[in-house]
Amino acid sequence: MTHIIAGTAGHIDHGKTSLVKALTGIDTDRLKEEKQRGISIELGFANLTAPAGVKLAFVDVPGHERFVRNMLAGVSGIDVVLFVIAADELIKPQTREHFEICRLLGLKRGVIALTKADLVDEEWLELARLEVEEFVRGSFLETAPVIAVSTVNGAGMPDLLAALVEAAREYKAPAAAGWPRLPVDRAFVIKGHGTVVTGTLRGGAIALEDELELYPLGRKVRVRGLEVHGTAVKQARPGQRVALNLTGVEAGEIERGQVVSLPARPRASRLLDCEIELLPEARAIRDRARVHFHSGSAEEVAEVRVLEDSRRIEPGATAMARLVLERPLLVLPGDRFILRSFSPVSTVGGGTVLDLNTTGQRMRRKGAAERLRRWRGMQTTERVAALAGEEPLGAALAEIEARLGQDLKTLPEGIERSGNWLIARQELKQLAAAVVDRLRRHHQDKPLETGLSREMLRSQLLGSAPAGVLDLVLKQAPAVKSEGEWLRLESHQVRLAGAEDEAAKRIEKAFADAGLAVPALGEVLGSCGIDANRARTVLAILLREGKLVRVGPELVYHARAISELKELLRTRRGTRFGVVEFKEWTGVSRKYAIPLLEYLDREKMTRREGEGRQIL
Image 1 (cartoon, rainbow, N blue to C red):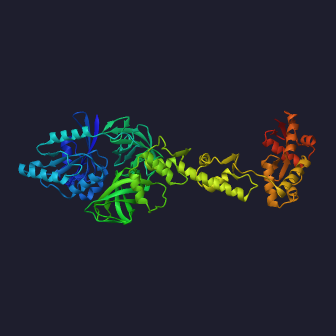
Image 2: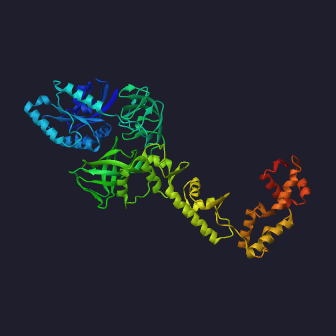
Image 3: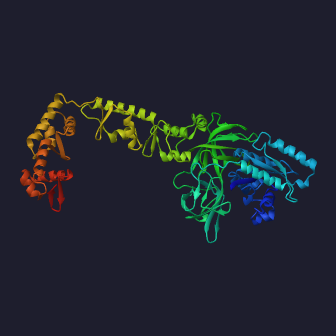
């Protein structure tokens, strides 16, 4: 079965609703006010199973100028437009406005119904055909069939249905690509079932029991029931009219324009970078002008930040701009939209969303328009590389996926990954050069220090980037050597000389001679012959080289004494003992015994058990 969504378009009272009723037997005017006034106010829906395995879902839109906002909520998801023009009135204001809306939304095919043919004679009807053909010349409807029909006597109705079926057979349904999105155009309650929302599915598939999220409300929901074109199914595909029975949300919380999608993957945004086309008859749009923004089933007030040097968009021109919405909406790159003037309200243009700003960072206007023009022609892999390369420290994978609206299966050439972080290889090379330069300066300033700790270097050069990015940087810096937590240049060696060398010998000898009853650290450093800061540096070198061992913050031993102590304990492996026995074995006072035992616990030589210990 081929499913296709056909939307009506055209001026008020040109017979759109009557035409759908004649085709399907369904009156799409449901509201009491619609019956009383004889005009469509809200969207109407009907289904028809046609010959040749085609199922048509009709979205009937209101034609009155006051309800164009409702028309826009329905027409954005259609595949084929059933463009309706009354033979007795021909081209009217909403005929033109609806036509421009369909064109700006990127519709590619349609069928033109010349309604109320029973009210005119053949000569007038032929003139009407010529006027309609002139009206659509050069547009997406130029080759569309023009079929004269009457819902009164049924003339032309079989031909109209045949034309719609042919359009359906020619239409290629979009393949599942990206994340599923269902822009909500209706929400209501069915007794015994609960909340139901309807819309036209985009992007990917939705299945029964899927866990989803309602954006921008942020409410997690579950699909309890699923219908496509009125038939219960287990899975819905993009391009189909879908009804979802949801748990986790009340119908009163749902508004038209909200979107059902995957949880925590896409991100609603207020900042949309776009290409805008202004209609020739519209007035110029100046920078920071307010407009009504329509995309999917959503409507929001937006401010236009024109990115071109002129800071304005001329009638009939195309320009790059950022739209700043009053409230966040879930839209993705590639989505088309319509702009209507703020007051008085009329359609002035439309365009395509090119990029999103999901982080709220400040806009840099310089070069922004050229960037978007380049961006417009990029493939997905090129956009990934661009996003990862635009930030010196890279970007989170989730952020890039949110801006593209899809999962990334593979990474483009030149992009490296650390966990869920992406960064351009060229940026890694520049960061590697910065690391080498930072270490070189450190070695010059402090030649007696081995280098810098990994954490210090990361915090100085990589800021908020994950710790794993440093490993990627170091792969690009073979001149940097890693020694535990310390980094140094391969060419750097610590060589003590002169007074520092003599001080090192004195410090080491003082602890070597002391055995396990060592002198106070400050006393040893104070008598080594150099100032306190240099003495601390020499101590750090001796500790790093393993000649001395730090047991406590201010308690240091010679490595030989610690080694002999460990050997003493090995000869007593398995023995349980207390502090008194340890003092007898080593000949030290409690002042030294307790810190040494705590050190041995940390070294896994002993294990504390109650008031005693056991040698492991």
